[in-house]
Image (cartoon, rainbow, N blue to C red):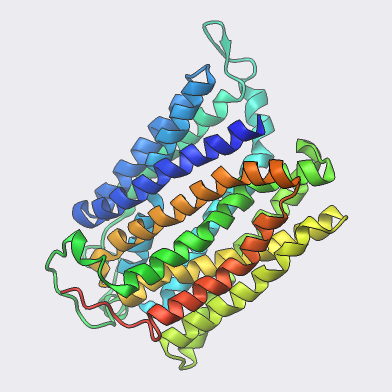
Length: 384
C-alpha cells in the first residue's frame, strides 16, 4: 500500500540518520581510506541481501541495513572535499560529487527494465531473479568502486602525483593542530547548530522529491510508470546542473573578492527564492508545468545543499568535518523520517500535497535566517 511505501521510506531514513551520526565520527577516527571502504562494503552487502528475501518484513530489514551503510557516504565525501580543496573551491567540488546521485537517478530508471529482462530467465532453485538482479548489479558495482578507492585514494600529503605547488594551494588556509577533539566539544557551538538546522529543515524535501515525485505524478496526473519516466528524468538531469551551478556561483563570488560569508549566504538566498514557486505545483493542470516547478525547486535544493555542506569546512577544522557533517546529516535524515511519517496522513486527510509543497516553499528562507542569526559572518568555531 501507499502507507507501506512511506513507512519503508521512514525506516530507511531512520537507519540513515543513526548511521550519519556514527559514521561521521568513524571517518574522523579511522581516516577516510578505510572508513569509507568499510561503509561501502556494508552497503554493498545490504544491497545484495535484497535479492535473497521473499517477504515484506525481510525487505523492510534490508532497507534498514541499506540505510546504515549509505549513511557513511556524505560525511566521507565532505571530509574528502575539505582535505583536498581550499574554501573557495569546496562548494563547486561538492556540487560535482553531489550531482552523481542525480546521474544515478537518471540511469537507474532507464536501465532497470533491461536488467529485469536480463535476469528474468535466471533462477536460483525455483525462484526467478527478475527485479532481484538489480540489487546484485549494484552490489557488484559497489565492490568495484571499493577496489578502485583503495588503490587510488591517498591524502594530498601522501599522494605521489601532487606537486609542492598544488599541496601549497590545497593547504592555503592556516595550518591546523593535529590534536584530537572529543565529540562533546562540538555541541555547545552555535556553528554546529547553524549547520544542523539547515540540514534538518531542508534535506527532507529532497527526500520527498526522490520518493514522492513518482507518487505525486501518478495520483495527480494519472501517469503510469512508463509515462512519468520522462518527468522524473527531467527533474534529475536539471538538478545535477543546479548542484554544479550553485557550487560554482559561491566560488565565483569569492574569486571576485567577496568574503566567504557574503558569497555563501548570497548564493543560499538565491537558492531559497528559487524554491518558493514549487507551492504552485499542486494547483497546475499541466504535468509539464508541475515538472518545471519541481525541477526548479530540486535544482535550487542541490545548489543550496552544495553550499550547506561547505559550511562545515568554512567554520570547522578539517579533522572534525566528518563528525559535524554526520551530526547534521543525522538531523537531516530525521527530518526526512518526520516528513515521510506525516505525508501519508496529510495526503489521506486533505487529498492533496499542498501542505507539503507550502512547507518546502518556506523552509529554505527560514533556515537561512537562522543560519544568519547564529553565525552572522560564518565565524570559525573555537573548539580547541
